[in-house]
Length: 244
Image 1 (spheres, rainbow, N blue to C red):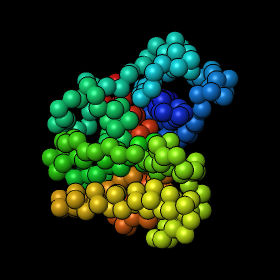
Image 2 (image 1 turned 90 degrees about the horizontal axis):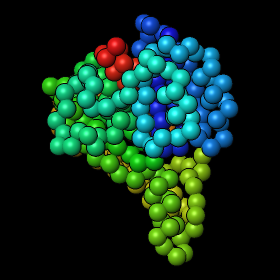
Image 3 (image 1 turned 45 degrees about the vertical axis):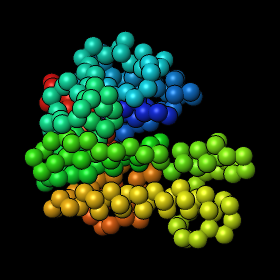
């Protein structure tokens, strides 16, 4: 049994893997501010020599410190590890661990290249793996909720709002709230479609989407796009096996 820890901007996700399967047998998620006891209880179930890989995009938290103190057989994700693709990027030291892991997960799920990996979280990242299995960079833009927060924060009259769970694009907002939702959500859909169209000049493009709004967005995109909610964890496990 091995563990993959993904410390994101708002919570930590943990994938529990057995020795042979590339997909996690269990997935756990813990918030930073209200789940320390639950997280510590989870850690207590596993011995100190459990094989662990850790990815983080945040500064060290109390939970993170407790994790590193317990497990001795651990790997910290970085671009210096052996990866399932080459890297062609000007500043690999600044490349987010979540992006590296998501791309690694995409290489597990997609046998063919090229691949466009879309991670729709707080920000939306676009990462491209070429026909020659080389990470070639991509793009970063604000996510749906970040767009809504920015509209409220940087104006005097636009209200604070979040996207309703049952929101469906309707093209023409009939109120200020509807116009904000349409601009943030439908605008994001059009943005993603534009990136897919750009990279579709590469034949047989595979598109994988992950992140908190991935299922919502995947349903609004072309059939060739599929959602993979545990993509980062799968990628972490893959990287760990390469560096065992």
